[in-house]
Image (cartoon, rainbow over the protein chains, first blue to last red):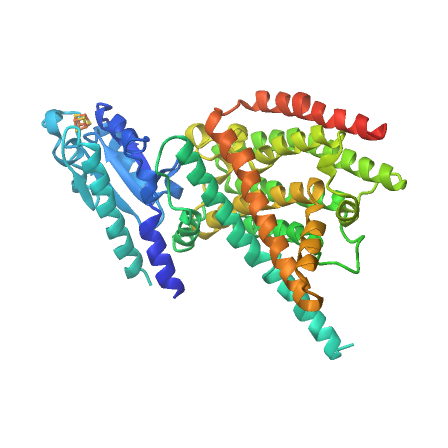
Length: 147
Length: 347
Ligand code: SF4
């Protein structure tokens, strides 16, 4: 019963940690708007946490520049299991307008397993919420698979 | 020694510690207060807000997460500090009378206000110990800020307790009454202390102390998640983090019920009169009035949380640590001092 309780709770209280991997700031602002009164993702339990240790879902924005790659990977490693990685915007998926640049190390999926991709430049807040909710379902699955 | 009476008493005290007013009561009501606070703040900001049960989800989720102990941390301190803090809060809850119900009925002198003052320090110290054990630089900044916050809040709190002790002592002609059950007994017989002119500034000061002591919004420089990554908690994850969050919730319950015991303790007698007026007697009357008193306590705690924590959270922005210190040592201490002077001259 206790295990079931934890599993249910895992799906209902996902805390986000946001990493900016060289984004143009468009996606970052859009992520914040998801938490504002208009869209209020907190009604689903989402909360922005200040440190990766508290996080369940890592949201990566930006095309993963050469400079940021090592930091992104290191930050993701600091997030306790079960964790989910969500990319936001087209940048971390494909490089978007920065594709082919010498400064870009992305896409992110070359280095870590990405659970949910939210495409768009920038994605609408509705799409972001949808992607995050999908991530919470994956999170619950991952919790179920643990011990 | 091991007579049946001994076992019944032991069982009774075990019940007190584990169920009411100990651990289970603290757990449920504390997290409930936290949930109501989050919902209320959201509504004040025109948001829908999380479900009232959100803190419960958060707690259970954290129980199911991996606990990462930083390589630089001292493992024992890191794991034990949260438990010590929570245990201290549960002990305080045992010492705070629920109107006319108290755990240590035959030992009225067992815990006076000074003990509660000391015990209230332990959760703060445990956060500091645990945070310092992680060796994180964010925790270092959080540590110094938490220390200043504790110092800032302690002085007005001592003044408030002193003025209450003096007011009750004056009325009874026994100098200072430091026993918390003595204070509540006095109120049960002569009406709540909030009715005295001298106690109104002290009550106001106590209301302002509640968010500072719990580290809630305008006074949360020590845990500022936007600038220093939650400070002392920066390296915590999993179940120990959950216990810290739980302690924070229980602290709200502790301080609001301390307020009720200090200033509104006379309500219990009213409830007993009411139950007697309905015509109940004996054990039934005792049980019914106890349940009613607990319900009233919970309601009052909710109201106090809404006023002192949620409302203040919604209308203010975070204070810098030196502003916080100045505020507590001037405005709040001033209020408590006025009360003390008034109580000294017997108003
Ligand atoms: S997807 Fe578009 S808005 Fe988002 S970071 Fe990339 S370029 Fe900027």
